[in-house]
Image (tube, rainbow, N blue to C red; front, side, top):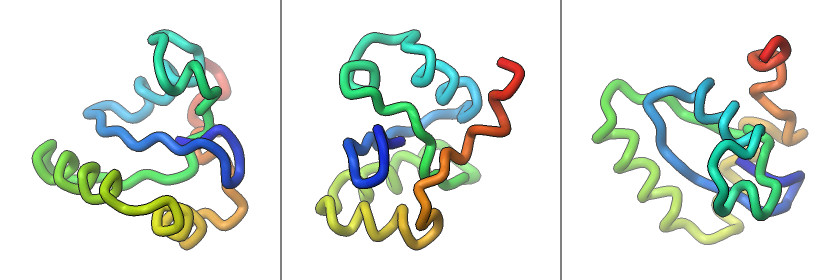
Amino acid sequence: MASNKNGTIYTGVTSNLLKRVYEHKNGIFKGFTDKYSVHLLVYYEIFESIEMAIQREKSIKGKNRVKKLELIEKRNPDWKDLSEEWLKDS
């Protein structure tokens, strides 16, 4: 998730992406994403197991900022909020 294009980036893992995005967007939990207004889903990956997801999360968190930006821009060059349609009626 990101605050805006080239802004603050947050990397996390969840078993329910829709629910977690909703929580971030609505400030349900006070913390990093709420403090830095990190509310745009700009990149995500889906895995078959939580173990694989956690391994990938650690890999991404270990990358420098330039690599993280490249990862986002490769799939989402406009930094569009990928959850926009999901949460229309929420």
